[in-house]
Image (cartoon, rainbow, N blue to C red; front, side):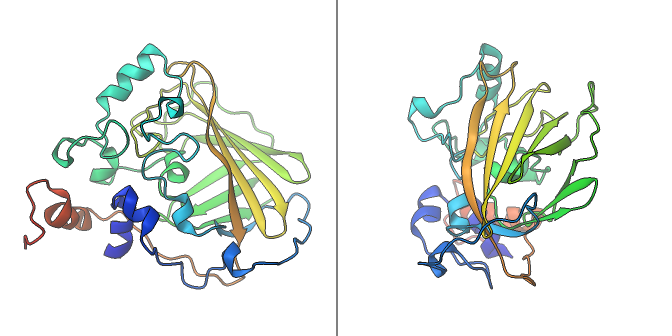
Length: 276
């Protein structure tokens, strides 16, 4: 378990350049070079899905994949004054405003819930999608979390009590594209690993396009008029690959004891790596 925890919080350079282990039993696009696409089934996104180019492709250590906090100001979202002030209070260990470990106030470091959409804008791994007549259920590998997207026609609540995972409703806009909206998200969560904030007014659109039988494209758009001057795309058509039947989703939990072990050995600025 600890090795997966370390991959979660390892430096960005490690995530990019190291040989990240593949999920046991997974099939990625590089395993199926030369295959001919098979037509997608109609109105069906069910199955177990893995980032098509390997799960390292979806480890977004420096912030949302389509808007990384990499020092390029064009990659910073369009903050309102209130949004920028709130962002300055978030002391992240990653991105262009990263601080020393001892100063980080990332709520995930104390194993607060990651929340949505950070679960797909930080360390997205395997997900399983289950469709019922009234719901789309999404089960995530990280922390073994799950979400419900209602498809029974109910409206989103107008004044919802905040939740870590919000309130979600979705519908098919064509035979191969499913779109959901989520509101009522607890503003204690961060959007990504760089500490981008959100307010209680945020709406998140997630769009799933079934490109063919084996591929699903996921797009996440943030719309928060209190903290951003216009909607912005945080994840743009991340390609997911359908996994074989019987694929076993690994366990990946946020463990306070493993967090403490990491900080003692590696994360503490005063650590020499030999602490016991």
